[in-house]
Amino acid sequence: MKLPKLLLILLAFSIFSCAKKEEQTTFKFGVWTTADPKKSDADFTKEFKKYKNGGIDEVLINTGTDPKLLKRLVPLATKEGLKVHAWIMAMNRPGDSIALQHPDWYQVSKEGKSCFDNRPYVDYYQWLCPTRKASRDHVLGLVEGLAEVEGVESVHLDYIRFPDIFLPISLLPKYNLVQDVELPQFDFCYCDECVKAFEKIHHKNPKTSHNTSIDMEWKNFRLNAIKAVVDDAYKIAHKHNKKLTAAVFPYPEMADHMVRQRWDKWNIDEVYPMIYHSFYDEEIDWVGYATKQGVADLEDKKTKINTGIYIPGLKSDKELKEAILLAKENGATGVSFFDGNALSDSNLKTIAATKASLK
Image (cartoon, rainbow, N blue to C red; front, side, top):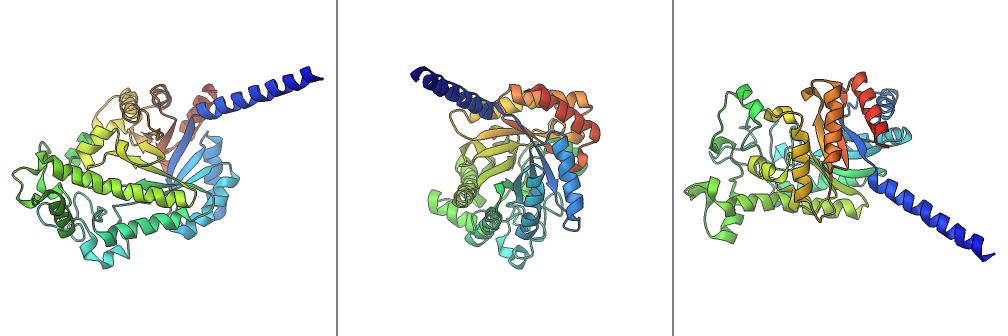
């Protein structure tokens, strides 16, 4: 009688171990998508079915930080077997009706011009200050509103950074720009609150710095300002039993250089580096390089990496498959595609087939 019991125990342990191994090695597929509130439930269901049949596991949905719309969509996506992440534009808040009532909440350039009425690059760049209590509390309040929605996997932060001090190289001709040095009109934030907080710590004014581009304390101050918002958002998300995730620039050193974002130092569950190789005039193998760099920077941390792939930047389905495999081979735990509208039927077939080949 003892032998069968022992065998049963060993068998149960073996099944458990295999299940754990499968759980640990699961490579997930996601897609960023923006929800049109005018769409019917039937149309959303059709969209979610399309993703699921194409091998997608999760949807990162931009609802314009509308919890009501999110509540409507979560059960529709869940029914089709998709996990839902609440995608929020964090420090960049275009058209935010509450923020627009407070001009002092907005970031100020080194030239002294505010994003409230003088926006860098594009009109939708309406950046809030991460240092000023009122503006950061507003952003964190929006995070909490999304975290409270039942069934959401994570609050997914986007634009959790400063405006681009350097644009991706392939975008420069579009704006007729040369950015060999840090230009004052794209250097943020020099508002009174940032200057006052910096002076309190370092006893100097960044406005009178000889060369702010090599002033490491001033740069670090801004990196820490973003980190502080993320760390508070992490507490809020976890208070509601949700994860915190974020769309970030390709790898930490690059993010640091381009947008004052050092995501390897954040308290966060998962990051989705936007490794859009075509933005940087790079070849497809750069997807592997940048993924590997991020994974190395997160060594010994629990934070997971999901490589972001830009669908319009791919030349073929062959490149799509290659990008997925490069991400996996270099340590990513998943990939996410930008964006849902760009995914063709052929793309979805390739994703599903590639996913099946990984089992």
